[in-house]
Every structure is written in structure tokens, then in C-alpha cells.
Image: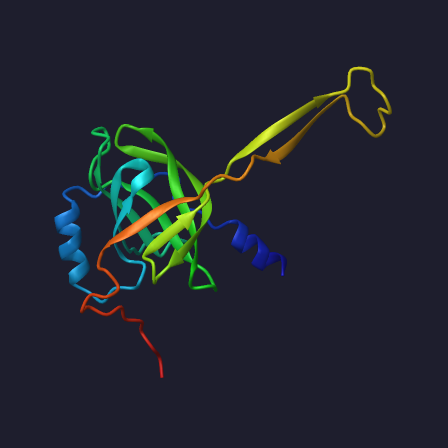
Length: 186
């Protein structure tokens, strides 16, 4: 039991993203058409950040099954081909563990932040609520009941709920002639 809990807690994305040169929306479309797609794979729009992203299967990354690749951005400092995050499936096929990098150093993205993403196949959306916490500091200079209340205490506090952000699917659309296939074992 403890080993299983430790294994789940130790799951993480690589500490920094990779760069896939020469990858843009057209080349991603060609790549995706070459193999049977899972429903989450495709080209997505991230409206909150004015980005077009590609989600494709990946190998060689310990805990992730899919990588999220930047295909186009209004921010000219971001290069097409930058891996901005990863996804890992869970026992609920509509829930994924999502890692998005939060820091940038030229062509290197670092500092993966984790969230739970909800995939709605019918609507073609991936929705997530980025973590937002604040630390509350309390000082007890009068030392009233010092055995109960410490001089200084820190407590995390969840900030009020915000609207979730997410991705909208651009390609392939569920109604397309191409079907999403899953390998079935008999």
C-alpha cells in the first residue's frame, strides 16, 4: 500500500521541456494522419494564451503518455516545436494528469505545474483548473496560549474559485470520416 502511494506521488513530468525543431501545424497534421489516433490526440486551440497546440503520443517519458507541443503562438518568443507539457491517463478515461511548464529560459521551459484535466470527447474540450494557493501568515506576539498558538504560523489557503481554462479541439473533429481507434485485446 505504501509503495503504491509513493509511486503515485512520485509521478512527474521531466524537469524541463524538449524542443522538436521544424514542427508546425501543417507538419503536425501530416504526423497525426499517419497513424490511428486516440480521442485526445489532435490539434487544439488554447484561447487563454493565444496558442495552437498539438497533442500526440510520446515514448521515453517516464510517466506521460502524451506530449503537448506548441504549434503557433502570438508570443513571438515562443518557438513552434516547444513541448509545453505532458498528459497521463487515469482509471477514469475522461480525467488526465496534466503538467504544464511554468517558467521559461530562452528555448527551455522548466518548472512543471500539475493539474487534473477533464477531457470531454463529445464537446472536444480539455478543461483544467490551474492550482492557485495563497499562504496565510499569523503572528501571535502576545503569546496568548503559547502551547496551542505558536508565535508565527503559516497555513495554506485555497483562493476563491475561478473559471477553468482549457483547450478546444480543431483537428480531427469527432464527426470526421476518420475514426478514433483503441487497441482491443481478445
